[in-house]
Image (tube, rainbow, N blue to C red; front, side, top):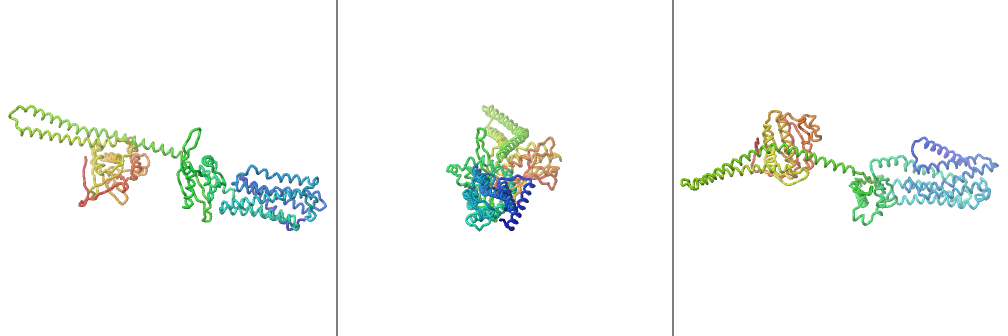
Length: 630
């Protein structure tokens, strides 16, 4: 019979299970597969314990009622080992699925239930029924059901041990040990009860308490597939388009559906398969996604830090091949300062790349529009600048023609001597020298304007002197300076020669924009001097344009270079400084800023890294040169 101690243990177990069931009912959450399996074991065990308590308080002469309670205990007992094996399968498979053949595990328990409840007809379960173990005579079917239960428990334990040895992850090892202990205790007790007649009938149900406790700790205390990892999975789905979890040995633990569609299906990646087994010879030769992934994982293993790289994947979609781009982050998973695995997060940046390309194209169009607008503004001044040398050349040619006609008319005049002809030839050479000066000036203007007329998207990097940069800016801005009643004054340090590396046309455009803005500011105070100069420090070479106008207001200054903002009203677009800043940053790796001029006005500075500048110092030179250009 059932002792008082056993009854007390059963009552305690029953109360604990009822509390657990109530907690599950009152906690609003979606149960995962492994939680459902555990809850099924707990409920069946509660029924088993309740039937045993009924046996404890049923009188011996009520044999029919005792048979019913005993049949219930045996019926429930046949389902517990297969359910334990299902938990093991669920654990090994990743917790969210079971193999299709798992249904066949319950064929024997169903047959056992039929045999148990129909025992009075065939006596396959009991030849002699009694609640006293010494009086029981078992039938032949007990061997079948007993061996099946032992096989289910042993298989579950074997799966757990194999999984723990294969992965060697700290958390998995703890869970596997608990699951294995939960199955080992009833297996050992069941075998002892079979070969020993001294074991009480309550020994097997008491041994299953270890199964309830150990499995409960593994599932709920260690949060295996509980709300915490479920939340982690949701976070991974939210922050990544694809993710992959690997053990420290490179075994694939889990991944989400997008990863399965993009990567796993193409490279044969599957759960419980080592990633290195998915590599083929063509993957190594063509540097495919799986090859890069394995390489990054190994780098992460060695560095034990996050490894990031960009991965391009061509996917067949809607009958056409489309290229997608992913930023991949491989992060090490550390448990107690030991590497336990890796998580690979793939972020789809295809749309971002397209947006960046569109932004780049838009910026290039804006730069081209601003360049053309600036060029159009300069055309009027250039035309005025060219008008003077053209008229000079025309006058020189007319004078030279008159001298030539004079020579022709005096060929037969005996009074004209050789010295007279030499004087005429000297005057002709003088006019030709003036023509050369004018054509050289025109050539300089044409060279400057030709450089500005090139496409801003084309980069023509070369080494050029600072003097050439200033000369081109002076030529192109000459008319605008004259119209604004301004003078351009240059001031430089005691340098013999300064050369810069880059595209001179880009820098001329930026410098012209600053000079043009300075002229607009200077006009508001009636014109005056605009200073262009240069200075250097250890890290950069700086070119500045200084005016004495009204300055830049704090509100505009905060947005300057960051937004298309202007203080010129309808006469400005705000593109000039915005694009100039982008050009200095993008093509020279430098920066721009504005400061207040201590004498009033503003100072706009261009900073270029020292590596792009070469300076030759003068040996005996004090102070800086000062040149004026009206």
